[in-house]
Image (tube, rainbow, N blue to C red; front, top):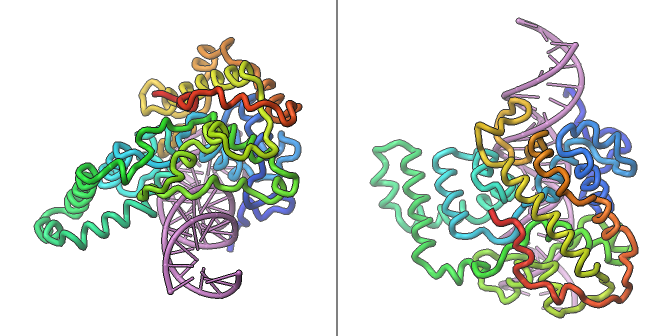
Length: 323
DNA sequence: AAACCCTCCAACCGCAACCGC
DNA sequence: CGCGGTTGCGGTTGGAGGGTT
């Protein structure tokens, strides 16, 4: 065996990320932009993670503009067709769905779509036999297309109950941090934030609304607010406008475009493009200081037992990343 | 109620591509 | 051109939570 895995180095932490680590990383990225991951562990005090882990955490979880939750039929259709055309090139597929990470798409494919296709193959062996004289790609594509059409004609509202919900974007990412952050110290050290309930894309579970927007929206739904306290409406508005810009920013950078070549001739086309100078300039003065976010996250999460400002936030406030 | 099984997803690992020297 | 370092990608896994027996 040759080299050691980068994360085998002593002092390098592995496993689920804590809210504290997320905040450290997000704060660093906000200041320096994504990229140069090698320098992240050395320049961030208290973040004992390898560069790989940092990059992954950012691209798959913290990056603004990430859409989480159930896949829409449109997204599903795109994935199915792109997978049929491109194979398991998840990063490339993800470049067509800039709000989704390659990891998410890969997981969704492995846990849902592959199964669907298998069922489809069993249910309609005719398709495969009919296509047996064609290329494998065509066969697969036909089947996949069939699966997609099947989804179209079935009860989509039953299959995809989130259709009417705005998706939570980066605001959710941040609020997720906040939510975990506000848990008891025991919880904070227990590793990754608890998942907000299992999301069953194919089910019509009654908890889907909460699952769709488990943070701001969920909090606003009047449940157990527990030990959470919140920022003022103004701070929240500012934060969300920041998130909105960040989301659009990333979205623009992410779109496969010859005008935005990848920073280092990159193979693949991962959405996590670095902030280029031009874009930085365009955003320039409009970018609110990250210190506000830090203050919000770390500061006096103040208003202990404070009022639930989020109750005033309309549900669609989470839909900050309209592309 | 407990044990077991299943599902899902965040995170890890190994490898390949790329870059700078 | 070769080498070492860095980054990105895709396959796989660990474990939490939900469902079933």
